[in-house]
Length: 405
Ligand SMILES: Cc1cc2nc3c(=O)[nH]c(=O)nc-3n(C[C@H](O)[C@H](O)[C@H](O)COP(=O)(O)OP(=O)(O)OC[C@H]3O[C@@H](n4cnc5c(N)ncnc54)[C@H](O)[C@@H]3O)c2cc1C
Image (cartoon, rainbow, N blue to C red; front, top):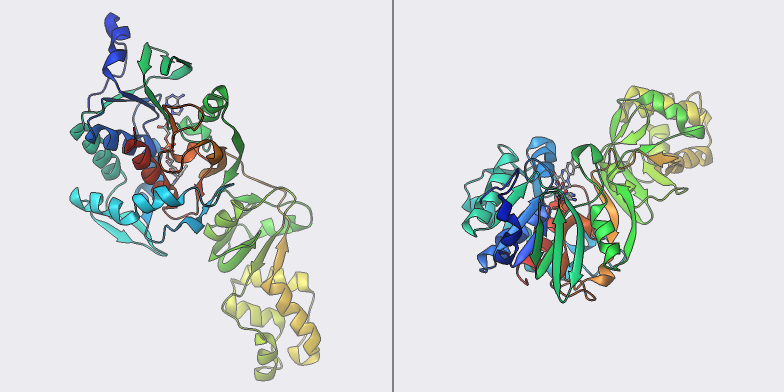
């Protein structure tokens, strides 16, 4: 892939005629789209404002990139239209991406819950995508910021900070506003609105939740982690939760955060491995045990103490009525937190919401009302669970557009 960072020669304005498609954003979705469109003989230019492509890929999965999830079924994605992602996901599957990874000799492993990671480094995934783009003669320009775009007579004029470009097909692949420190912006939404496309209100997702009010005392547990079932708005996840100095985090919480809305509650089952009636059983087995001592056998001590303090049930279990024990059991199985917010886009791994799927063809990602305009990846109102789902959406939507342009 040729790179055209920096200033172009003065005849740069004439270069426009040589590209069939311009892809705005050289992240996961943009690079996949470029490779596919290029392989189909399209002359492709990818423009990215960052100094290098795929920056989020490089930091993903703790530097090892959780590049897909073998369970990437459509019900693991959030969208105003839950059916929208089906077509693209079925035409470019985790197996397809895995075959690409293996063709490039990248060693990988399944960590947990179907999450596939590189054994080595996320750099290998970026290297693989760039190699695929190079093979397809796609051109990449980094360090080039895209601004205004005009649409006239079926063609798009793209104004960048370096030149004017003209193309028949334009792909919005500039991602969402999560982690602005990395250069993420809401540019995709501004551009979509400019073309009259609706945008579903973007919210931070896969993000820690903050606690205030009566829950503020739980912040004292900062650093304590335990396996829970976290529930919110009909979704539930059995994974680790972590108390932080601001509230709650850990995979189970990040997962439910995508479903949480201000004012809503989340429910935590602190003892998901215990069946109904377990506390009455303990009373029979060890009548002199206390709630605190029982909880300490199953949970980290600090959490066990905090919960038993709040439940206010002291003394041997033998002295507690069965009804009270059942009540305690129920509270431990559905402990309710009322988060007062999230840690925002600064800490959000992805964005829920984005360019409305109602505006796009689910087969090609092309805007119904603006022929030649496509939107892919995180910019679109499709958001995956934690665990490789968001990259799978980026690959699948990028492929769908690249296959159609
Ligand atoms: C810390 C972190 C870890 C993550 N880990 C994982 C993981 O392990 N697995 C997983 O599935 N998902 C993970 N994600 C989510 C994943 O990174 C995103 O879902 C994915 O990168 C979205 O791909 P995209 O191509 O749509 O957008 P991006 O990858 O964000 O790419 C957008 C590109 O557009 C460029 N751009 C933006 N505005 C402009 C402009 N005006 N002009 C030109 N270029 C512009 C940006 O520089 C960027 O390169 C993680 C996210 C974060 C923040």
